[in-house]
Amino acid sequence: MADFSPHLQSWLDTLLKDAGGVAGTVHLHEQGGLRLAAAVNIPAKVQEVVTWVPSGKGMAGLALERGEPVQTCNLQEDRSGAVKPGAKAVNAQAAVAMPVRNTSGVILAVVGVAFADEREIQGRELERLQCAAATLAGVVGDVSR
Image 1: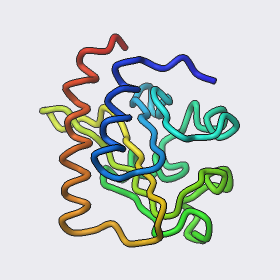
Image 2 (image 1 turned 180 degrees about the vertical axis):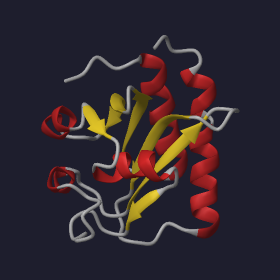
Image 3 (image 1 turned 30 degrees about the horizontal axis):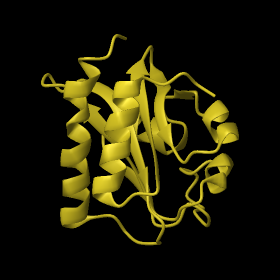
Image 4 (image 1 turned 180 degrees about the horizontal axis):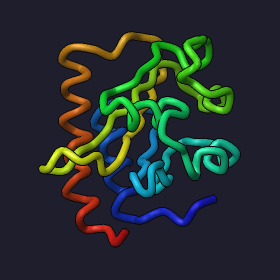
């Protein structure tokens, strides 16, 4: 298992508690891909697989590539190709991966949040999640990269 930053881990714990999420990840953007920096309720085997995510691969990689949230209403039954098979090991249904930008608009990270129930994450709920995820930009500045 990865050696996660205590600051990022604490931030993710708080985000999930406030959002009602059951699992989540923080991937930092570096060298054209994403490096796993924090995880909650993600099985060790899945953490190994997503330690490095190339741009365009899986939900987090697609969020990086597209620069916008990528979501599924059911991780277990998604057939879009955005959800990789290992994600089914996460005990969750609905999930969203959201890019986090700095003040210059550069993507610093992608935050993933998963929920116990199946649903579309849109409108005010998605806006609220994106605003909460955006606070990561201040935390990332405090974490040596």
